[in-house]
Structure formats: C-alpha cells, structure tokens
Image (cartoon, rainbow, N blue to C red; front, side):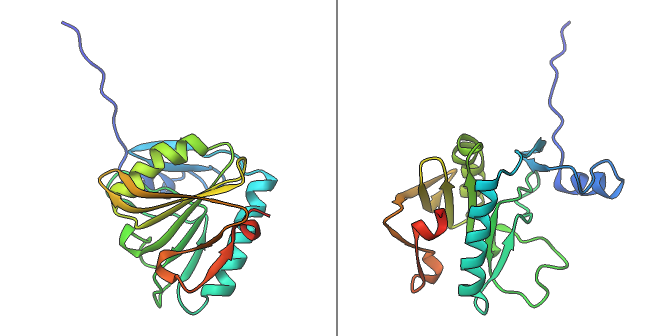
Length: 186
C-alpha cells in the first residue's frame, strides 16, 4: 500500500500566528502565496528607485483622495497575503490599523518587476484577478514598459495595455490624473 504525500497549506491566520510566535521575524522577506510561504527577491537599486518614484508621484497626486501604501500586505482570501510594491487604496480614517486591506479596498495594485516578471505575470496576476482587483500594473523595468491589466474575469484580466516610455498613463479610478511613463521608469 503506497501513500500519497499531500501539501499542507498555511492559512493567513496561521501565518500571522507564526509571526507572533517569532517563527517569522521582521527581517524575513517572505509573503504568503496560495498557502505557501515564499521568499521574496532582494530589492535592487533600480527596483527601489522605481518604487520611490511611484510613491512620490502617487503621494503628491492622491494625498486627499486615496491611501498610498508601499510594500505593505494585502489579505486575499484564506491562503494569500502578498506584499505588492505599491497599493492605492480607498481612504479610511484608521489607515487600515485594525485590519489589512482586502481586495475590495484596492483602487490600483502595482508590482515593480525585474527579477520577478514571470512570477508577477503568472502567479500573482491570477491571484489578483481572481480576487477581483480591478486594476493591476506590472512595471517591467527591464523592458521599459508598464503592463496595465483591467477587467478581471476568473483568474485573468480581459484588458491588457502595454505602455511605453512615450505614453501617458492613468489609474482608471482617477482618470483625470495622468503620468508620463518615463517619469515612473526614470
């Protein structure tokens, strides 16, 4: 008689208990993706600079309209708590003090990709689409472009636009505020 091994998935609650117990610490660069604790790639100077540029543009533009969160966590369902590079969130008085943002709180989610492009385009994209996150940008710093995803359906986005350095870009939720892609990419 042979016995099949099964993977034991970690829930968001268990993930938090591991942190509270000291199993996971602040210096551990990990995130919970589909029930698995995954190491995050190191952040290089280009990645850091693009995140800082987006943060600056968003904070100065959306200060009274939305909450900008940088490399913060978002809880998606029972088994995922990714930490995207930038979240543009609905404003709340408590700044999400008592609860992490949920998918319905997200106005725009941005991942900056250099080493993580295939993971962001495949795994994270399907998680974000399935959660109903309305707009997801992948800033591909190697190809100097931004992949804009909108209209989630199932685990895909029906609309994808490729924006290059010469293009203007805007968040669908705030279409009156445009940015130059080159100002994001540097």
